[in-house]
Image (cartoon, rainbow, N blue to C red; front, side, top):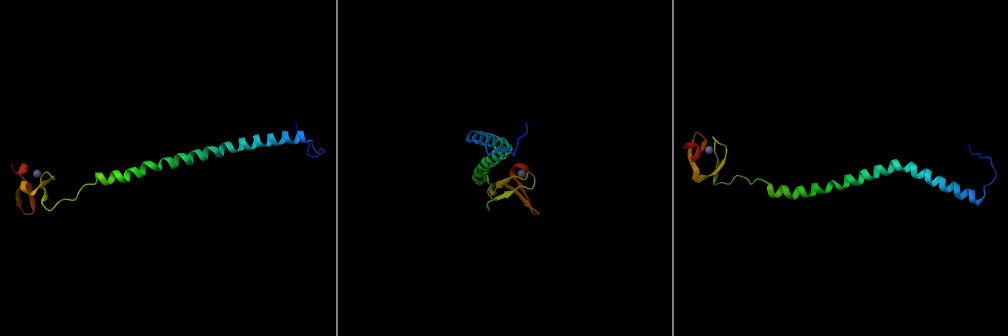
Length: 99
Ligand SMILES: [Zn+2]
């Protein structure tokens, strides 16, 4: 039934009924917007793990090679100077590779 906008002033009862209908219409209109708000909250929650990773990165960080260590030219592993078997032509060979 089409609404007659030219009808005379409505009674209070009619007005309250209309306002309820208006609220329900607005609520259904907002239902699509509520989904966006939820997505925003979820995105904010995912930022927390990133802060934890920064602390983990520090503890896992590889220490720089020390002066008393060398990288074997054969196995490419870092060994202590005491395991250096050969150092010819810039090639550092550990005792394991020289054996
Ligand atoms: Zn080696």
